[in-house]
Length: 548
Ligand SMILES: [Zn+2]
Image (cartoon, rainbow, N blue to C red):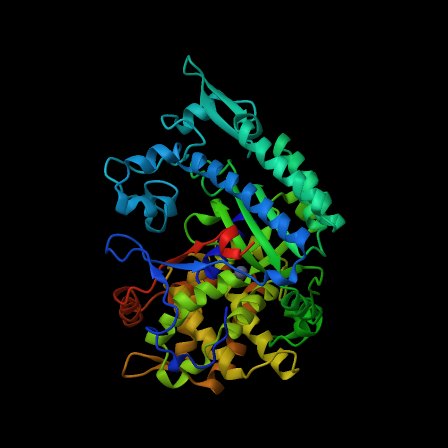
């Protein structure tokens, strides 16, 4: 589940809040231009964006709670600094002034979007175990020591005065900070009118004090009606590259987009019908998709700690605890304003270079957001068990399954969008969704060989071979709508058949032939690099920005 989440983060890695149909007429020099923080060749480029939402829909109690959440999130940020690097103040003090901001973005002296290359003089490679373990500890020493709670997600490993390894729980090591954070959560709970939110906040405070998160995860799963939400605590384990055992502190402060959340609920109800209509022979669509998935749209108003480091997360799929997942499933949160920021600052500039001028007006945020949403919904469609006794699709396709599954979600997502347009459940026209889809492919391909990157390459090459788009003499891409509709059906059928047959060799062959970037495409992608299209976004955020 964690791996899958990493994938989601990557694909969504780059998206942005106004829908603007006529981008052509927009002079980039006269609109709100993002502040480009670094354009130095060796450093990455970031666009700085404000995190806001319509807070007028919230009452005074909710607003007061948001302030408390942000204060608690700031504590998570402090804890993550310690886990990722160590002493933040000491590092910033010795960093040359022009690189201080860059060190803050990276939570240390290593460039997160450049394979952790050290960008400050005097630093070697980043320790694999970050600051969760002693820097001089080897894997062998850890394993030999067989420490009590050594593999716990919620302990640090340290040396005593004799150099002997021991573990200490987060709630003990960070006692001072945790007691401040829990006080803030409990104070927030006194303002909560929504009983589900109140219950969650109280249980989450207790969880932070004990490092036992189960009850609070279950309470979070039951939060269906609150307009505000607070994801807080040690959650993901990516920062521990030594073993992947240790969870990092992180926080998101969230405000629900009720309008979009309602629409999503309606779409999920169409799943059985959409499954029946899949463009594949009957034996590949006999399973019935679950409609219990909890999928909602939010504006994120504050990022702190782990989720604010490196590529910005714009979709959350939690909790990670498999026990809670089995009992309750997961909640999937789409972070709409952060997606919009990526759309405006990354996807539109890519469009203006690579999509043919005659079709640029079709690239819109609404279509982009919808395509991404339906990608998520489409994971629930199709086939999970092979039709020929090879067990589950995952077992049969092994390491080939993750990118094929992402490719399936992309293409079936678009297929579903077109069906929902036919049913008038979605607004807009087919052209908009198809051109935006192509621009989305060009965006995701830029990030290489991850599950999503590979899926997009396969789709790009399949589309090109089947004439779904062509490359003009000017080096731009133009969609051929009829052929793209045929290709959507063709690729859907191909992927579902490979999955249903558990055809491992077939997927290997497809990936080898089509999961590649041709030299011609590479040249086009290089244009994006020389145009300094931002690599990611960073946030102007907090109580003042929100006007709280
Ligand atoms: Zn996915």
